[in-house]
Image 1: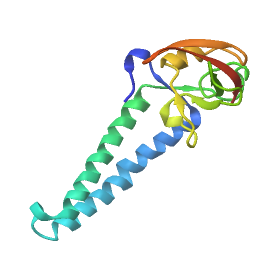
Image 2: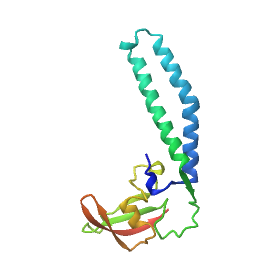
Image 3: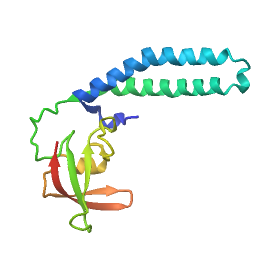
Image 4: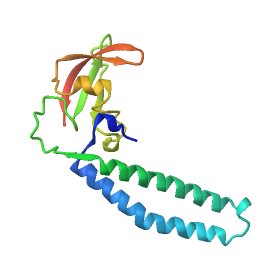
Length: 164
């Protein structure tokens, strides 16, 4: 699900290892459990009207799609350092940035995580560094205003705060 034309997906070491562990779990324990569920459902009889069988096959399809997604993501991933060596006052991969859109009230700000969707933090919206907003933000500091092309036209945002 990544855009290969924009280069590899950048992941923190922590996220890379978490995704590796998820892939390992899905290809071992996950596949065994799905196979057992399919076998148990087959034992119930007529497959054409067997809801358990169809549910297990659907779960198998979704799991295999996630396996393929993780394999592709990890194959093309670039692990980036997030050890604080980068200047914490500039927007980079793995930072949280607080933005205020032009025309909004002084206290109408929103936090965004700059990075891969796989690295999302809680319910915080994620901005890909390869997206128009992400490209405009990278390397900028608090107090700067950037402009980017959105589907509805050009938007201007002020960087209120940059953190890790």
